[in-house]
Length: 363
Image 1 (cartoon, rainbow, N blue to C red):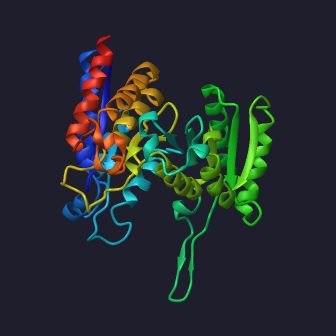
Image 2: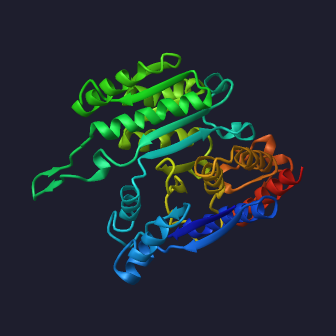
């Protein structure tokens, strides 16, 4: 099976972690029928400096012809805010990637990195945050700016709200989840009241799944009080961005979290949720696991390959028992530091996971 993958390395640590993701795909080529054609599609801050645009038309045209997009990170500190990052929005809107899928899982070998007491972790943390990806405040529609007043408009259409909530219910159903949570601010915002009405309406067709509504502020503390109870979450664009970053800290680091920007059945984009982190770029200390787990998402969501996705996750779990990058190292006084747990750089972490993945594929 031949698959064409657009490679958007970007800025900062983006190129460093993309290399580690590609390693996983090259291992998969050796032990499966897959053949991957990697197409370089430059974008981001440095490209903006060099060409005057953060997303060259050639890059975007090539992305549209690929089976999936692998995206690193973009942004440089010496550019105006958002100058490079708007390329992400261009891709999301240009390809109608209306689903942002963010799985949040605490690996057992990383329980020591969760800042919560055991009573709040219990059997573990394993949830998926489903974020609407093309509307709301982040869509920047109808903004008004003057010397004394700035207005951003949160615009939602019925079409977009219905399709993301339906996706959320179907996702929960397919995963065998017993409950789905909708997060809004319906006590104050008309957009959220609109959202909740549609959620309750669609929910009537999924009576076998328990349904809850949370206000965004209440849910932020619920994530700390009972994260072990959360399964599927569906919410609007900005709220999803905020709560997924909060949830990421509970599982060790932003560097642990993958995401998919998805238009089901069409070209979709996969990326870790961390930014370009220019302060650690070129130091070889970035955590590549978010990127590697984004490969898992790509295989599952774009290519329907759950078995290989599960093996990648297993390879990550096994590797974390042997070594870690500095962002997820145990406390200096931890017994784990006294054992054989190795401190690894970006390349070393990627190599270790690739090796474990290869061993699993051979079995």
